[in-house]
Length: 415
Image (cartoon, rainbow, N blue to C red):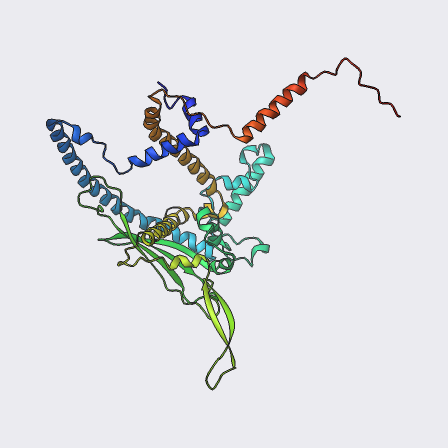
């Protein structure tokens, strides 16, 4: 009996579209259907299975307590992380310069400046080392003034717009007309929502700019930590309920989420007939700032196609919020430098390998079932293209064995 490990079955599926289609239809037919296992079990075994489900229910209740404790721990450490984020904001905005203690956290920075203490030997090395120690003592407790050429640069320009742009998913939301607005972004932080509903709020702080009057823009995600249904025995995590965004107070003519088109209209009747007036029409355009106007679903909506599209948009919106919360905010400097991309590539490779392994494991039983009858794959009908290919092959073989005839060709005579 052939198995999924047999490369013949995979090759058979790839080469036979009819068999591949039949296999796909077979998998689709299994979705949402009962395996018939419970119906076929003896009564005594059914009771034991029922008892196991009772234990599973107790496991679910304990799991909910576990996640509640995790949420409390997350809030406790959020305050500790907040202190570090405050230090980061001060340096990014230029409110202060980094201290010598902050610069000394990473020893490799000394190597980048060309200081190699291990290579310093003899009297010259000792003198050099003593000079460095004296300089360190002199600068201890002072802040870094910077080079003379850098005096006009405050903080780290374009820090947050660069960090956001280096993330693949978020960069797809940022348009060219968003860049100048995002250059005014001075900080992004996250605050956890209180009980009973959980969730989080993303807070974007902006310096004074030419585009809107808001100093902060927020995006809130409301989650319900309870199971979706009381009968559920498996906890899949908090359920996303809705998203709420800030109304942006755009300055006149500065709204980057719309395109303003001016059209001339001529009055057709009345006392002002024939006069021309200019009408402005706003058309929505793609922009990162649409992120603060999340899609909403009408509670009375019943059309499945509308609900499905809305659910997909909400899920994508929530995924962006999670990326900002879980990746950008904690490791902003790594996204600014682009070093975080190295870790993203590793994660993507691992996910692709896991998806391939899961797909192979799911396909194995059905593939084995299809191969149990031992039947040979159906032969594909020969097409005109195949005949041409065979004809070409025959011609090539004939060319390889061709030899000139022994007799001389008839001599051509002029009359």
